[in-house]
Amino acid sequence: MRNRGRRPQVAALEKAANATWQSLSAGTASMPKDIILDMDPGVDDALALMLACGSAELRIRAVTTVSGNAHVDKTSINTLKVLEWIGVSGIPVAKGMAKPLSRNLETSEDFHGADGLGDTNLPSPKLKLDPRQAVDLLIQEAQNNPKMLTIIATGPLTNIATVLQRDPSFAENVKELVIMGGAYNVTPYGYGNMTPVAEFNIYADPEAAKVTFNSGVPITAVGLDITTDPTATLTKELYEKLEESSSPRARLGATVTKRLMSQYGFVHLHDPMAVAVVADPSLVTTKKYHVDVETVSDLTRGQTVTDRREWLPDSYKRPPNVNVCTRIDGQRFLHMFIERMTST
Ligand code: BDR
Ligand code: CA
Image (cartoon, rainbow, N blue to C red; front, side, top):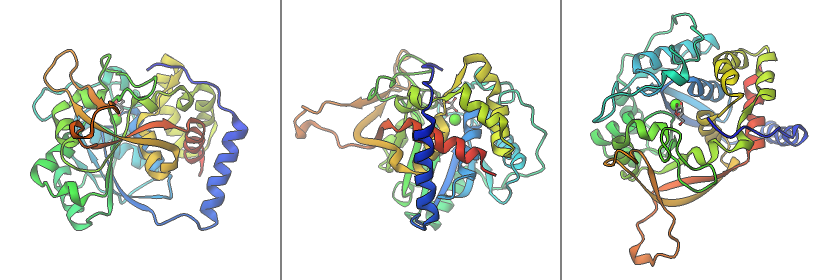
């Protein structure tokens, strides 16, 4: 966690949000996008899930869970806890892979709390998991809905890579895979958080990321380059808006981020930003690059190596495989986040 946020310019934020809502209520909004969230809740995954639930542009077909911030047993229960707390039922939640493709699991409870949700200790959920394994659910959904599904992956890419290994047609069946992961060196903030060069989700399972990046699936990457941009960071002032709200999403959002907010004085909204980008792609500028993932070196494990050599003759260039987000409209994103979390 770095880069304390600047104060938001409230008037500009309100104007942008009004314009968005006016266009929605004027009927200019298109059909909701069918999405599956693949996640490891995790404080910011919980925020992402709640933001998705509050976004009319998105229809959540399922949530699949993976080990990352905590073991998948915990991230699965956490998903149910969040949905139950905000009163959402009827979304299948399927448990996924318990450990990375070929490494030991290293979780992040020191950051996300012993329960993975900021030490909030929410009650055990009554909601139950879907009987399907996450990988089976993802394969089935993609086969049954070719070119319809957007997958938003905000944890290590273990489920996605396993799906691609079992069913290579997944790469063509999926409309888009939007990931929160990587650091692409395309903004002043595009360096690692787990190591100087590696972002947590890619570091956690670099082999899975390599399989995914080289599969041909259309990828948009929301990396640290934009998620740690200070203009897009949850400040104390904005946090207080969550705390003061009567909306269940906002109140739970404040509860799960309380510990990080008091520890750091700000919270990076990594995973909610991936959801926001799917709901409103105009929030970001993107550029296509060839990106590969380091899996051999200990020093640079999980680095997303971005080929930015524009001067390279075309005959030497490898085709772009990742649509990398290079700029975020931080103020508009923050306003959208707060507005949707606090709406009842
Ligand atoms: C990513 O790592 C996790 O800890 C967060 O949930 C987010 O997905 C940020 O590097
Ligand atoms: Ca996550």
